[in-house]
Amino acid sequence: MKKIVRMVLVLTLLGLISGLALSLVSNYADPIIEENEKEATREAIYYVLKSADSYETEEVDGKVIYRALDSSGELVGYAFTASGGGYQGTIRLMVGVGPEVWKVKGIQILESSETPGLGGKIRGESFKSQFRDLVARGEIGLVKSGEPERGEIKAITGATISSKAVVKIINTELSRVRSILSTGGE
Image (cartoon, rainbow, N blue to C red; front, side):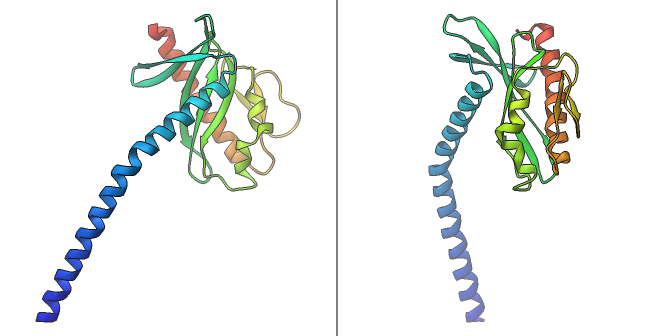
């Protein structure tokens, strides 16, 4: 009986010490993680909207939209995050659009767990550069082979599912942002 009581006390003490240690580490790390996420967001905004010198953050209908401005304070476009399911997990990205919201200025992958060497190629410049100044008055299209036409991008060979996922995520969120901005969120 003494062994059981001692074992329960030791386990309880270890649990309390472990919980306290995790709490202290979390209290230390959370502000650092939050600051790193803010910096990654800032860098992504300037990546997708190259001509921006500053930005303002707005929340409209529960959606955070970044209004990007040039050095004279003129609107150069909007940036927003978009996320959805990929082949291996969630893909989260930053999308930049022009002031008219029909031209995609660029995308940046913020988070992805796609297969390295295949779906992981969505992080590569050859894929992301297809979105730079892409005219997308409707939905962005995806072609598996041949040359893409206006408003289309070419899928990554061997990673069609990841390519489709990125296009679907962008189309869904772009539609939402267009709706928000057309109803006075500007």
